[in-house]
Length: 300
Ligand SMILES: O=P(O)(O)OC[C@@]1(O)O[C@H](CO)[C@@H](O)[C@@H]1O
Image 1 (cartoon, protein in one colour):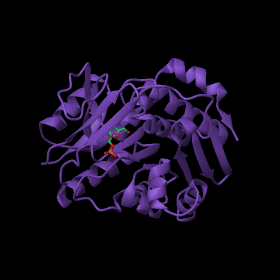
Image 2 (cartoon, rainbow, N blue to C red):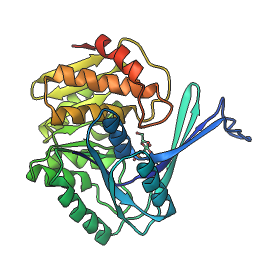
Image 3 (cartoon, rainbow, N blue to C red):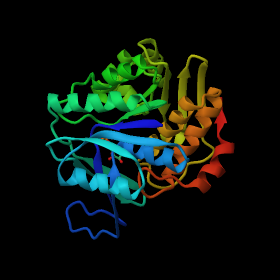
């Protein structure tokens, strides 16, 4: 199976509204509530593609239980390690032309709780063909956490993908993951000087096998051992971009369990990202958009 790790799991709430009045009362047209956090979204996309997946991470309190119940009802296998703190809620305010996110920081995790997680992680790695390490870290965990988890997996022969921001992204190459996937803003924060290509090369020089930069409607950039490739999108897909990066990561994870030429892997990953924009909530994608856009993506 493919293991996805969501240390800062969330109950994702999406409010659809025609227009927000920031100093007034807003009536919400539609509400979606479901288990989220980036690794959960990756797992949803992989499961929809017929892959065997398992969700792990940390969950606590009534919100953590709501996350587990929602994973059960989605038919997603999970082994979330309990923590004393309360799992967070994230909120997307979705207007037709703007999507505003409010991400709570999440619980504070103790050393003993993380040690419990490591024991579970080690056991699950024995069955894993690839591991995805995604999203923010809850308070209490060091910025080296993803580097540690990637190195742990690598030592056991399991390739890892890291999708992180800030200090955890800066440290990620130290764990020598197979792939690091920042978006352009995250990459610019981690490597402030130079172009996205130079930034990606810098992360690769420091230990990542490949660096894939998601560029929103402009596609993606891949700096790999086989060369540098760009996915150019034929058109911009309208919708909710929240979770598009997670769908792209799901595509990259497929490439770790069934390797192929980078141009093909990148085209599929970029098509999944675009198809996720067409779905109203993170973790979903529109198969029709995927089929339509996939053959039109140019790889240069
Ligand atoms: O706060 P993080 O962990 O960086 O991001 C969390 C989050 O906003 O990312 C997903 C979209 O990628 C949402 O489903 C989710 O809750």
